[in-house]
Amino acid sequence: MDHELEPRRTELINRVTQAFADNGLALEKFEVFVTQLQAAGNGAELETLAASLPQPRQNPFREIICNRGSLRMTGPWLTSLAWHIEGVSSNIRLDLRDYEDVQDLELVLDLDLISCNCRLILPFGWNFEGQFTSQVSSNVKNKVPRAFMGGSNTVIVTGSLVSCNFKVKYR
Image (cartoon, rainbow, N blue to C red; front, side, top):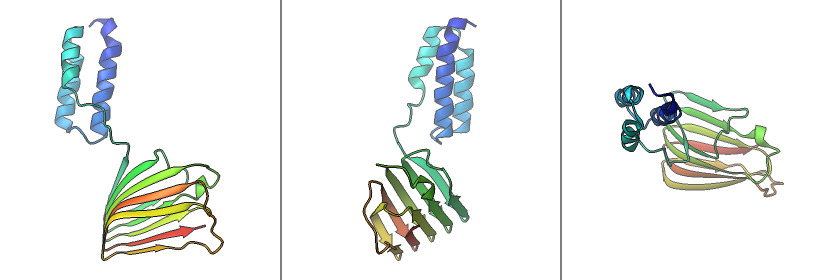
């Protein structure tokens, strides 16, 4: 193996690994790509393989799927400012109180929930915008405190709710 090829080979293997981690590549294809990349003997072979590899994901959303379970996001859990959360028959709690001192944050939560109870807990002074594309037999409550004053942080919630209870609380 030519050692000059190793940085490029490693870069391409990392790209395939990321595609697999993002659920954009089946395990069988992942294994084939890695085997082919490891076996490539020259730069031309690597570049031919590179042209057939999946492109990096353009979707900025981090994804979570919770089916018939419980999802509790508390503490410093924000690793992205855009989340896609899917749930069926689940209890979901998204607690943002650890970000009370953060300024000028805009967080997007794209939800696809069916038969779920979802509670969004925001620090006092945060803004909530519910921009649901679909609400079927769902109850959405935004318990805004009496002395609420709009701050610089906003949580935008989009997506669809089917037979769900969705509550926003401020603490």
